[in-house]
Image (cartoon, rainbow, N blue to C red):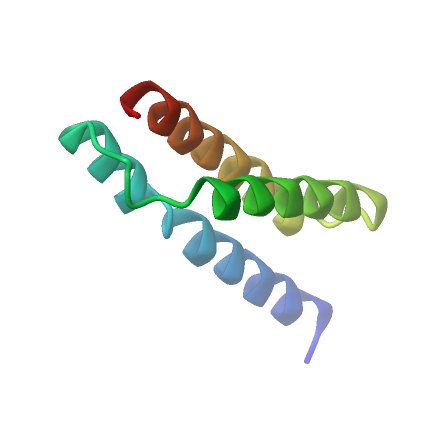
Length: 86
């Protein structure tokens, strides 16, 4: 595989794993319920995403940086709505 092919796979992975959180965020906003969202899992995931952002920065990986920054924002919103609606 070429570096270009690997980058395409990276961007594909970034987009698909990032948009996976949009349905949860929308469901939380629409229903105004977040009881089924585990607070501990959410906090651990946010911590892990923060680590991925640092890692992506250190290795200069734009797909990792973009995906995890957007994922962090989406999950912080889910956390905020969970706290508001609890």
